[in-house]
Length: 353
Image 1 (cartoon, rainbow, N blue to C red):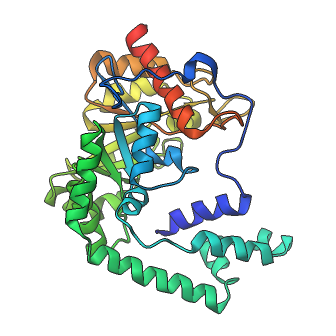
Image 2 (cartoon, helix red, strand yellow):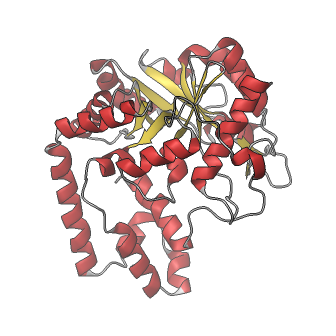
């Protein structure tokens, strides 16, 4: 578990929530997902590879059987598989982190919570036993990776394939500070799963560090954006990172792009389509809205979602379009149903017009 994941999970734990209920979630006939190939999912609509990142189901239980069932229920046949979700399928040691964070949070005063800064600050409030638990886990997890059962990886790959579920990305997130061993492991694991790419956050240093490993395994290192394109460093575009290697590609989040810049993502796609491997698909408000850059139920935001899908269908249907579910889920629904709602939305746009 890297620092970014630790802090992300910590924020969820301290808030005591994963997906906040709201009253804006779709329902009715939108939740009736069309099934194809018998009981196997098929989310290739009108020639477009629709899918989801398993982060969309972060509030659900993990494990291989569960992930396959979620894909069936939501009619998803293309996955960007989170590295931690895959490693859970491979029986990785379970982290005590969430339990420890909840225990520490219960001991903190409001002033201590407000003054805490990042992972280091959190560590300051762990007792000796909790620190030992984390150290023991880190050692066990390192041994798990070092002694990976590659036959088990192959069996997991076959389970997904047997259910018509394609793993095109494994989000293992090697970065600028990753060791040679961790970089090699990240690409080897993704390759063994039949994936074509590994994703990580947009970064020139990370691209320079990991490009040789992408080239070694003949894979793509796909750079994911949040708000970077609204900053001076990246406002002109991704050329600085793309020039490092032909194996550097983009995992283009056009929702974050529109929400932070207000620019039409179709123009970006037209310009960089040959360097985009996959896209995170979502709907958001723009930067000038009353509630700026806010996730919305598909079709209720300001992102030109339909235009993006139709552009991909017309000209660039080699791109994967993966739902990243980040809008609030209503109390009568759940993240599995909502991913299914998103798949049905895409199907209506791409097949029914």
